Length: 399
Image 1: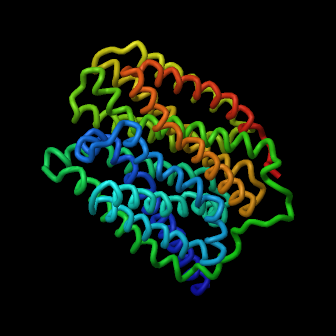
Image 2: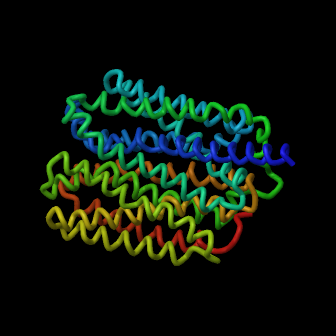
């Protein structure tokens, strides 16, 4: 009995430490990207870049997500999922360091490496959650998406103070996030000892049919891509939109932090509610309506107070939309393998779709010198998001 009790305690401790490790990995999946938006103006001025080229700093990681996502489950199968995630965090840390080491060439090379590292963890984490916590997958999705959102928001709010208030400049302000990646690397390291237990459990197989022929899989992919299109467009340009509405640079960067902090409760609650509902159509509709209200408010303009209200609305919609997209990978798949296949497809094509967001918004602003048409474009995307989400929210499996 004592042996059984000790073994049960050891298993509980291992699961608790795994939760802790997953949270630390999630902490690192956005700061290297969200820290860039508030510093775009400084980077652009320092390196003589256009708005469209500056938008590439957010777009390039998304292209890396798109390119690597289909191969991440295969990498997990070959190396073991735990080792693959460790490799991803190592690449992320290296990319952050390279990005801050020189001029335009190293800036974009490091940014691409950051995208590759994050892509691996992006795809493998939902599968690990479904495998390790099959009875609490929706809850754990809420936990790690909320953890992801916390540091995404912190990175946005800290960028300008680190760069200007402390006098670090944009390079050192971006470099600071390599420390967080280093901590996550060592926190995740003990999981390598258990990788042989799970190696090969998450893999792509052909016995259940071609996922690319599944209408539902395409609807999930479209929902993933459109919510990412909105997310990355906003984290890149909200500081500039705020600045155009009369806010100073520090407050404009803080608005991006508010945008993401406002989404934290929604990012946790949405998966929990989604897991309890027969279908998720109502959640999708609420998210879309909130988006449209907020974008209409941005078009109308206003002072600091009313801008804050619209930013909070956008944050709520973003937080719920992102976590719901990841929850679809679990709810629309029968097993771990299908979850990995759906995750790979949706994140690859979805992030490829979203990669055009920051560039398109920057291009429209460059040619109109106003934010009216960029915001109208985002409203149109939100309308299509609703249609895709209603399809993705149906109570069915992709295969």
